[in-house]
Length: 182
Image (cartoon, rainbow, N blue to C red; front, side, top):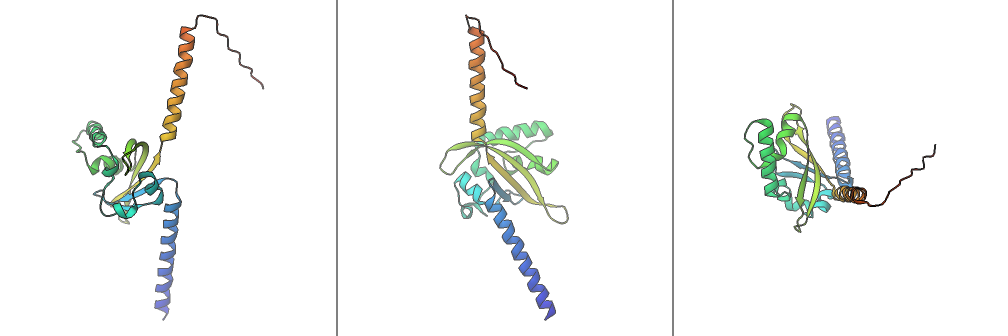
């Protein structure tokens, strides 16, 4: 009887931890995706569903992150990694996992493609997922949509260009006074 009670407590505890993890995943504002070593999706949280326009059940066990990426961008990153590591990197799952596998982490900006075909910029961080024996069992990607940041950067760049153009082409005297208060 005691063994059964201990087993029941362990199962209850495991269910509680699992529920907590799912709640954390689904309440995050970042897309959180876990994949097998070959890149097949294993976890796809609610923020990822909103960001990419796919339901988790459309992808888990069926697709890889390549579905969100422009093939040309994957090929370009493979060339960058080939040069960086001095070994041929083929466009494919290694493009997303090689740096994470070798350095424990990779962060890069990508242009991603939603299910509806629209494109948007993403900052993607990839880390290896390891078991108790420190063997890589897959990868976790955390993505954030950086569209607003890009718009802000572009607006700042345009403003700086207009300001520079004003000064470089001004025919009158321009005086700027900054009122500095202590």
